[in-house]
Length: 251
Ligand code: ATP
Ligand code: BTN
Image 1 (spheres, protein in one colour):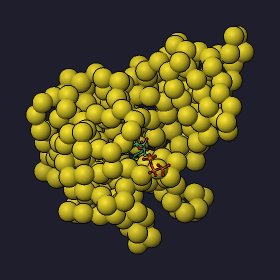
Image 2 (tube, protein in one colour):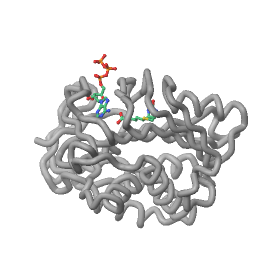
Image 3 (tube, protein in one colour):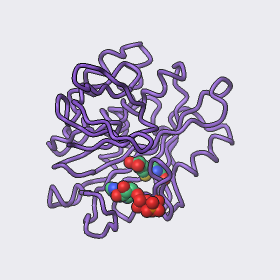
């Protein structure tokens, strides 16, 4: 906490040896009136959640962190905060370890073609009344990806760097970069966010396959719209997809 250089994010910080899920813990804190910027970190999670009701393996050595935000944003703009988080994460891995991390739409962070971090954004309660957003961030850091039972290609900072990183530094830099992103969005700079996101995006202008409700669309990945939807070029005809409904593969 002494390493924090933020105004709000992480000023209220709870650290646990073990939790079922930091996102679930922070939901309790929301109910108790938790303040903007509250952070929960667990050394390990027993039932971490990924997107689309998947399990997230969270052994000791990872950074498992959830953040409570009450941003001064409309619901539509607040949804962009998952994009902001991807940018902040990729930027942090570059700042601290010189890693050229990329973002796989919508918000997987990848390094050397494998998933190194994930983001789970959730809205807590009624947006109109409380305006509370939960951002869960998982970074595979100080453990070997061989310990994961995940079938998808995953990697860890230790696998790539060959040494163990300081998780406090990592959390502090991430919160610092994320606070800058939140502020820039609150100032209305959506264009800047889309630009930064695109500069980290993997697969732009390349062929991809998007699967939605059993149908596969093969086209060229053109980028994202201001609302975060993926733009696919199907031989001159553009289609857009929202992150909740599709999966994306190279192809
Ligand atoms: P199912 O019951 O359908 O198998 P599940 O809830 O067990 O679903 P998985 O199918 O295992 O979940 O999916 C979890 C997803 O998250 C997978 O894509 C897996 O590869 C990935 N995953 C889980 N933990 C990690 C991690 N720490 N790093 C990278 N990827 C992970
Ligand atoms: C994904 O890529 O599917 C999202 C993974 C998000 C994992 C993090 S770890 C901290 C927080 N607590 C959870 O249970 N999930 C998120």
